[in-house]
Image 1 (cartoon, rainbow, N blue to C red):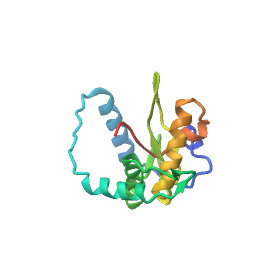
Image 2 (spheres, rainbow, N blue to C red; image 1 turned 180 degrees about the vertical axis):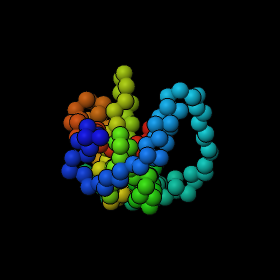
Image 3 (cartoon, helix red, strand yellow; image 1 turned 90 degrees about the vertical axis):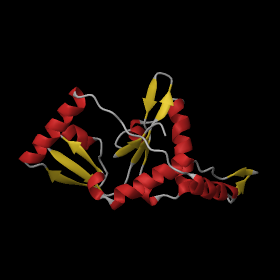
Length: 166
């Protein structure tokens, strides 16, 4: 638990001790994940309205030296939506730390970035508090530096939830 907590130094969270039943459930779920085959469900969704809003936001972006100040992606909307969902359901804005759950007050979202030979997951801190344009610019910078292998550990450690392969 102390090693996990060390990843979140300086981040505001509440520690929720696990009772015997929750400890047993956690152990059984871990065992099930490791030993039982899984299947995953997917769903097709209509994105027309979101794509329209995205296009309008990008068209309205202020120009800086003839270039848009930001370019919002669908991924940026997903990051923001997950962050807001985690704030709406605080029990989901948490991680398991051996004998306790750490429940966070802000939504720090990791976003997988493909690299040669693997993935890095830079973290958008307090994504629930940021605008789509701020998320977009920050994600672009983090992804670029991840591909160049120039991120600091603080930039890719300590996320609460993650998005991978949209």
